[in-house]
Image 1: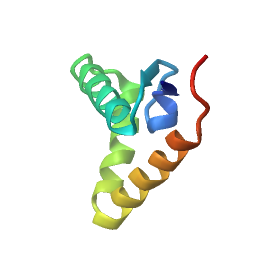
Image 2: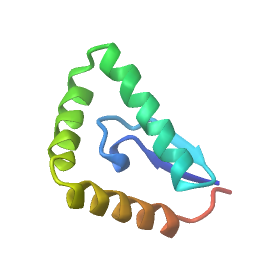
Image 3: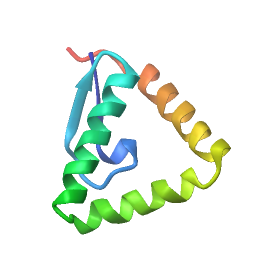
Length: 79
């Protein structure tokens, strides 16, 4: 199991996500983002705006996911 924070995944806070795969951690981050959006959390809304800019380009978001997957894979396993 590995740990990444909301900030490491492009978000706005230090909430930690723990998962065995990048896909699991990405889903947790997405769900957290949706919760923060519904709460109208300003910092998270700004972070989501940056992600939306990336999504304007298929290559941009693809490259972002590839880089985050590499970052996840390079992390040490939790003790």
